[in-house]
Length: 219
Image 1 (tube, rainbow, N blue to C red):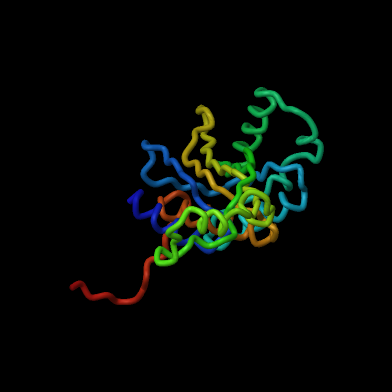
Image 2: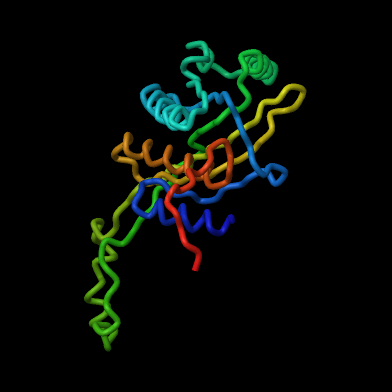
């Protein structure tokens, strides 16, 4: 099951700006249902946060699961400064009082610059027989700044927590996702939401795959 999921998500992300690096599901959980989920996008960029939380909420709504954006729950000053564990316990209790049973929490945890070669790898038939030919053909590696493409990869993480009465915030699922050079932030957000949605769906976490109504014949 896990191998099939990884292959499916790799195929999905091959033409996307987002890539699932790895994911973990609580081994004690086979199927997880939630009926009211708080969606939290942790970023100081309010536009990006609003866009992400709105798109994610839309996916929950399409699947008849109630979801609420954190921007509609947290006080405008809540994210202005550090909060204590006691304050977060109070937030959790408030969510329980309002019938929330899960939190989907997303944040960017790091970034790095990477380089790729612009030039294509030479065909085996065209390899040089002499060192001098090989050297002269590729010497611009030393001094040509345009020989490489530099891009930024952002490392993001989405975690799903169950908030249950009398229990600690229990981790149900976590996915590590890389976002590559998101020049089009809106598209990157759309791709990210789609990837998370399908990952949850494939593992019977909140969402369920729609069964085909077409009749099939076993061979």
